[in-house]
Every structure is written in structure tokens, then in C-alpha cells.
Length: 464
Image 1: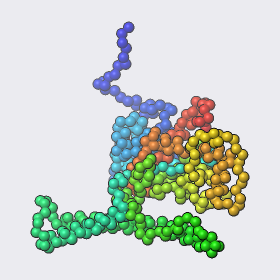
Image 2: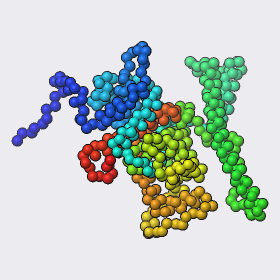
Image 3: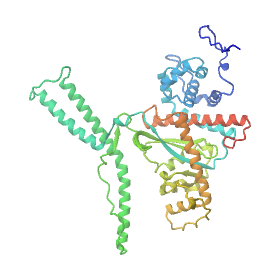
């Protein structure tokens, strides 16, 4: 028998199907995206009602374009523009129009409120289709997402001071040349006024960097001063009671910022943060995940390097239509007695927050059945009460859900979608983009759940 190959002819002219709906399968995620966008009231979209200037792209089209591209791991405005030519599904969304990268970037930058509205709309669709039921337990966590800035564009408080002194000395030398005290000429093409201006501008930028670092440090210093005074008062009370205070004598915080405090010239609102054993210029992206459905029901961005102060704000970010959770799970990085009291105040959810890093070993004693520990006494510290709560059987079972829910969500966002760096600068714009990313994740999740429900799957992992 002769070899039979499919005929691949790139030379004969042909037409795509005349109906754009024939370009994509009926069960494609793009239809879900368009449905979600069409549900938004028209008054939520921004139109140029004056009709002046060039024709504007329909804002519903631009929103659907952004959501689909974020769902498929394309975040750069230039990548999105290129997709309007090369991706058949994107051509379907745009009706064969081709918004340029500047239009895409401007739309993304100016429509944060719309993205938040669409984020809520997707969750509403999930509730209507029973993919989200009553929210009982939520997991909270954060992940470092690189800022659109290099850490090499940063300067420390100490280094900025040293650079200012060096540049002032350079300015003095240039002034001496200008006054004729130093007759040695400059290289061809260089002029003293321009070199003076360059150095003086750099001095101003470094002085501004030191001023902002000092301003940021002031609130931190106030908090440390209050802690220092409380420790000193406690030690003094022990002395009056005839006891010898234990431990090192506390030191008051310095009036000046530590020399290693950083400022980034490219994105001043981002900070140096530790990630995977190294340091990156980043923002701290937070997510609140429903443990049953694995939808993100709350999201925000902070520039705090650690999570200690973030628990209360994260719980408040939960979309109201999802209801108030019964329990909130978080790792040891979130532990703060004050934060937990705030979360649980006025009938808030019960917090299950690790007070120390857990033992990951599989020791025999960890496998043995144990009775619940006795309840902590009323006068016990918040840490002891939390430790007792997590040691109960119910506490252990609940806390196990944390790793099974929120960490896989970040894994999908970073590894499947490929989102590891913000495209825009500044915390507010980073929050805009993070809202888009979380919406894209939720759309994908909703599509998977609805598809599996349609196929009558029996898998508990994806059952609606």
C-alpha cells in the first residue's frame, strides 16, 4: 500500500468561514468570557460620548480581549496586539479588528473599577451555577510577584548618603574648572554646565530617596518605640516586685533609618522582598480562596515584605456576595495576636493561624492517635490559645485544607498562566493587574467545573 498523507496546500487562496462563530468550537472558554462581559451593565463601561477623535473600540470587546489573553498567559500589550493577527480565537473576539498595544495598555490602566466589577460578576455566575455554595472556610496566603523594575535600580539609605557626598565633591571640582582654577580640558563633546547639571540632578534624586525612606521608617519607628516602652515597663515592674528581669535589655529604635532600607527609582512603591532564598524587587499579592470550590473570593496587593499585618485586610477583601466565612486559615507568617482579635471581633470568622513552622517529618509519634488537649485557661496568652486550638482534631483537619487550596492556586497562576511579573508600575496599577489575573483564574476554574458537570463527571475534585 502506498503512503497516504494529508494534503497541506499553502498556496491556493481560501476564505475563512463567513460566520465568525464557526472559527471556534462551541465548548470553548471564549464563549464563557463573552457571556460574563455581556452581563455587565452598559453604564459600567466608559464611552467617548462626544464622538470626537478616531473611532473607539467597543469597551466590551477590549475587556473580553484582556480577559482571554490573561487566561492564556499573554500579559504584555504587544503580545496581545500580535495575538489579534495570529490567534483565531482573538480574531473572533475582536471581529477581525486589531487594537494596537497603546490602546490595550491605556484601556488596562484606566479601568480598574470595571475589572473589579467583572471579578464580582464571575463569582456571581459561579454562585448561580452552584459552583460556589455557602462559603464556610477560606484560606489566605500571599505570593511575591516581581515588579516592573529591577532591584539594581534601587539604592539603600546608607549608599544614597555616600553617593551624595561623593557627587558634591565632584560638583566642587567642576566649579573649580569653570572658575579657571583647574585648566585641564574635558574630553571632546563634554561641557562643564551639562556635567554640573547631571550631578546636581542626581543629588536631588538621591536626597528625595533618603527623604522617602525616612518617611516610611517613621511609622515603623513609632511602632518599635511603643514595643520598647512596653518591654521596659514590664522589666521595671519585675524589679519593683523584687525579681531580676530575664533576657537582654531591650534597645530603643534608632532615630535614623537603618542603612539597608531601600528605595527603587523605577518603581518607588515596590520593595525588595525575599523569595525562594533570594531577593527580588516585588509586590506582595494576596488571595483569599474558598476551600471547597477553590475560587478566589478576595484579592489585594500590598508592598509589605511580610504578611504579619495583612490578615484583617485580606478578610475584609472578600466579595460580600460570597457571605461571611466561618473559619479562616493562614500560615505562621500571618500570626499576630492583634490581627486575630480584629478578625474575630463582632462575630467574625474563627482564625486558625500557625504560631510556629510545622514539623514536616513523619515521626511515629505524629501518627499516633491523641486526645484533644485540655482547653487553654482564660488567662492564657493568645499564642497559647491558638496553639491549643490547632492541636485539636477539628483544628488539625481544618488546617490541612490550607495547603490543599491556596497554594495550588498560586501554582496555577505562576506555572500554568505564567504570571510572574507585573506589567505596570505602582501599587495601584499592580492591584489593577492582579484583579485581572485573579479574574482570569476564576474564569478558567468556572469553565472546568461547568465542563465537567456537563459531562456528568463523578470526580469529587471538580464536582459543582
